[in-house]
Image 1: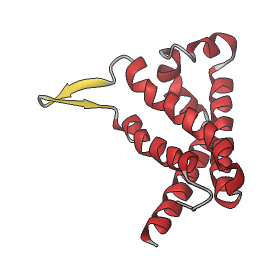
Image 2: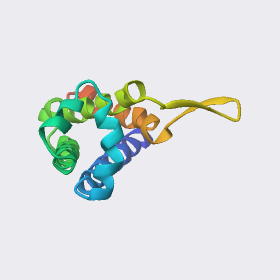
Image 3: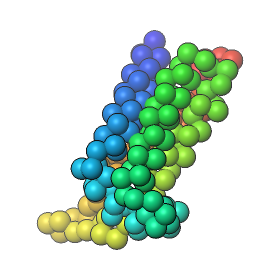
Length: 141
């Protein structure tokens, strides 16, 4: 019972976070805040040469919103949960890759190595999306 409640809370709030951030990507503030990440990413930097920063941010926001909707739909349509989870898994794999593609992500503070934790926490969200993908629809585990 606790597992089931925890699973639904994790999925619901991961989806809410994605949806909310996706909406925020439509603002100039958020577009400006992701520029340093996108411009240093080997698979995304081309986008800034093709479109404006705001358009790139809007595209990413749309993907986040659609991924959030897919996560919620996966709760109600278990038959398609694997397909619905794929965009979220890919999205978070790309997000966590920013840790390795963006200069300055790891630094020493007071003699201790730290990273940009706003991205590091996305490993947890990636795990939630992988749980949706891997959930057994037959036994509901």
